[in-house]
Image (cartoon, one colour):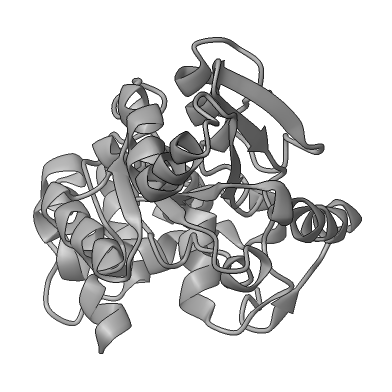
Length: 289
């Protein structure tokens, strides 16, 4: 597998980019939904340019699956950059009730200016952006208290723009998830694959699992011990840990060889389902150096 330098840009993503640029002038604010486990890797680097300095609300989604301490640090990091921040678990509805108030707080000066002109109750329009499978449609459905945006737990479901009313003075523009044309950093591609933003059929599952095991062994060794009864010894590679876990689970083939593909799929499935615990796969230090 070669993630580094991996390039793709399906036609619908090119179309979405054009649509964002065209519609942004009509927006009062932009809501960018990120995966709290990978807040930087799940940010499309083209968003800042495309959204032309509009007020920004960052939603850290899936906080229920992220390391709570790291989530607080990421929230502080984004606030220090001038963004409003909302911590959410869209599937469980956590944080979604605070969305409308967070938008109005973000735009309070603009809304006050409207009120001075006698434009009380003017419609506020917010564009919602996010990479595939970050939980964008689920978040919108919870905020709007209805099932309007199509939501499925796989990347690339929303393909067209949709206007979604929240209340009498707030409506959202749901946009299709877009990745960027090329991953120059192998770590970004891997993290996106762990969380399901990139479809598994373009990845090497075993290489992905080895990379995840290596990270967990280095940063969350207690989890591997608790879940797979495997001790992460000094010098163990991700492959070593995968072999140990597969042997403990009894995933053996002819000749007592470990079925690493089966163990890899189990590891990724359990990670994505939150069965391994709460992890954040990148830290503020990774960005600030």
